Image 1 (cartoon, rainbow, N blue to C red):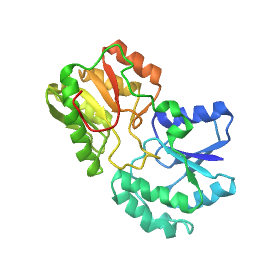
Image 2: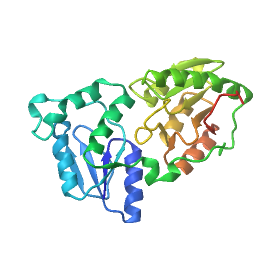
Image 3: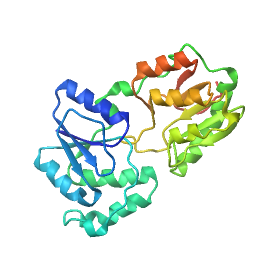
Length: 270
């Protein structure tokens, strides 16, 4: 049986719907302070200070697989609230909270694996979340967009090496914004006027742990890009989850945006 460790956003909702439609048994785990909209299975609420007890409870319920999905900010740990099952994990939890996103995930996944849980990636549960390479929209990237993808690749590589973010905006031959801890939506909301006509680029970090926290786009991303005056969205095929793909393509077509799913590999500006 699978436990969906569900954060916020649409991804855990999509996964829960897929699991429920299959009739697969699962439970949903919600961390205190980060309510999830996922439904369709028993809901277990927990706090980070009781993580060890949660793991014991899941094993007792017959859970042997874990999927982490959805947005969760770094929680504050009340050391006085640590229970006996979690106290031995406290140094590693503290190290995870102080680390970059990918490093933090690796630590948490190691804790789950050491308890005997197999880690399932979101795209293993719903393979359609990783659509194939191509341009499924009516609009296509212009020559300047194709030239500027090398700038985006370089910026994303720098962000990834620093374990900071997975997105940037490129316009008129320069990087005009990079993603910070607040995420893609905050970056798009704060774009300067110089971003108009540019594009949003998203890709995994180099060497990223791909079983959790792959970058994601959805209809809301398209709406934010359209409001910012962007011409399109470029994502790495096989490395960026696309939620509600049909709606994303339709929203791009309605707004006149292109969606370009690029093959991973060396940039050739084409």
